Amino acid sequence: MPQKTRRSVKNPALDELIALLPELDAEGISFLLEQAKVHRYNMEVQRLNDIADRSDSVGPRPTPVPALRIERSEDGSTYHLVAGSEWKMLTAEEMAALVRISRADDVEDEIARRLRAWFAAERKDIFLDLGLDLPSKGMARDIARLLASTFPPRSAKRV
Image (tube, rainbow, N blue to C red; front, side, top):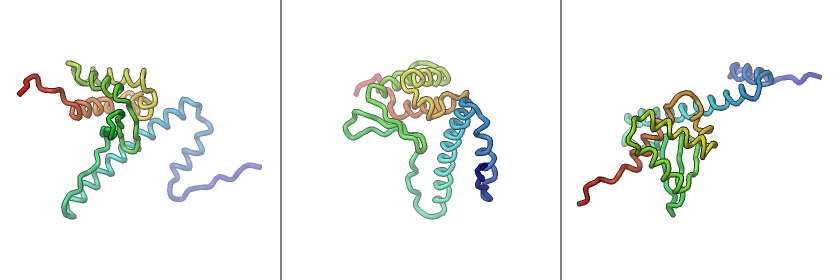
C-alpha cells in the first residue's frame, strides 16, 4: 500500500524537494547538503546584519556577534572557528599552522588556495562543513582575512 505524503501548504518547494530526493544519487544529495549549509551560513549573516540595522533606530546598538570569528579556550590549548552556527574546534598547533599560511607574503587568492588545501588534507570535516570544497573561494578568503586580523604579525620594531 503506497504511503501518503504530507503536503505542506506553507512550503510547496520543500514538498517538491522531498519528492525528488529518492531519485538522486549520493553525489547529488551531498551537493544539495553542501549548498544548504552555505545558504544557512549566508542566512545567518543576513539575520545578524538585519538585527544590527534595526537596532540603529531602537537605541544603543548591541555588539553584534560576527558570523565568522575565532574564539580561544580559557586555557589556550584550543580554538573555535565559528561560522554562523558551525563551531569547529582546532588545536593550538592547527591554529598556528593556519596563521603561518595566512602570513605568507602572497596574494589573497593564493593564501585562500593554501588554506583550502590545508583544510582538505588536515581537517576534512571543516573543509566540507564550511563549503570550502565548493568552487567559490569566498569562505577561504574570509578565513584568511579573519586570521590576519585576529593574529596580526608582530611589529619588526621593538620599543
